[in-house]
Length: 93
Image 1 (cartoon, helix red, strand yellow):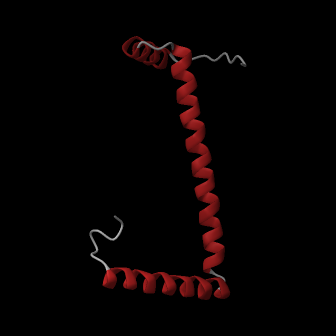
Image 2 (tube, helix red, strand yellow):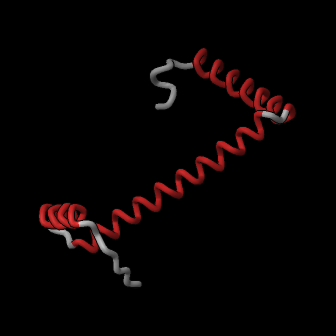
């Protein structure tokens, strides 16, 4: 396992120490968990931004729009079939 040294502002250090005492965890475990959660959130935001960019490109492509409309129509008809054949509250059971 690699070692990371970092300087914390006093207020953040106090919060970390207080949480460690409350949860009976050590400060390193809490910091590792917080860093992991932050990095996962950053990765998720990056992926969402990439998907949004791809959607914008597809939205300006007439062929992609037509294909999307056709797929949507298929799903609408499937949904109509499900709602006419079964009780909407229990179809999934």
